[in-house]
Length: 447
Image 1 (cartoon, helix red, strand yellow):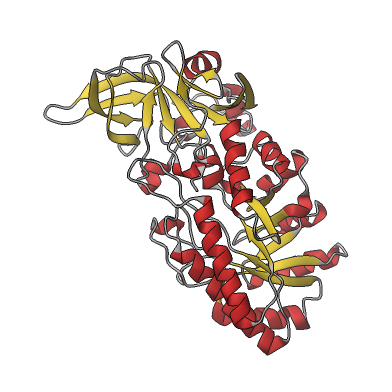
Image 2: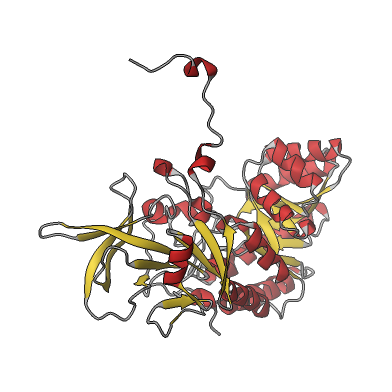
């Protein structure tokens, strides 16, 4: 069975009677006029569709906790939709924890992940009732125990491990191989368990957590990951008489950014994971544990697009034609960071037949600020609205104010209705945290 992560475009996208693109019943050119550009547009129908596909894919394994990897995109509005569909949250910062809390989600279904949690973040997570900590290292073991003890709490934890599995993705988003900043090496597990058993009485070890990377197109790596984890659970049972009851397998399922991408579906990875669990549970004579799955990109990626207004252009003699838009690497740094590729259409004339190959350039003062290289589009003119697909994940969440440019607004569309879920920044907001020392105010102008 197919799932939405295998599509380039949101499920509600179509060309309307005016000849323009629309998503969620909303004309994209009208959204650009109403809210300005750049503009992040999230399709609520697509978002709910993929969340339900994940639940359906794993329905044959009843003891499962579906969690959303918040780092892909976290706002209160997105959190409300995700929570309403029955998902918990994988969070990696105090800001993500606080956003989930302010959205009114069930904090007991939240897992705090990350390799360098601060004392303040740990304290807030315990106070707000975060359900699980994925503990990444020895310092964190000590800190979580100490802070939990000071608050009179017992904290449930998983140990994050590096399973030694390398998936074929960009090196920056590989996290499960041995040379990684994340997690305990398997040779360190005995020391960690010894500390928990003998010293850290405010920690309750529930299981293991592994995450093998992001934008994964391979199925075998999930099968292998389960095998590594269950072998370790069996060893821990034999050595310590402890049978761990929870396993977090991470997320990482890829999405289709261009026609060259062929990711598996949610159903494909569910089948492989469940088969591997059943095999290894039987082989090692273990009980079926509670499984956590924490997809992020594959939930929000395809549901989101970004709208830009076309500006200047430049034809290089005997070279490329560059067409600039009013956004770029500050609202979507992935092409600059990862050489990520995207697909796009012209929202106000998607069916135009007069086409040319152009390179879409951003507005920022970097030669590397290129959104899409060598894409065939209808001939672009100043004022056209460009719709870039699959920007729901890691656009807004990685955005910046580079060049002191304002961050875009975000709207949620559904049933021909659009609602702001992130306001566009203003210049007053931009400078609101700036401070000028009194000695500079009184010094006058620099000669």
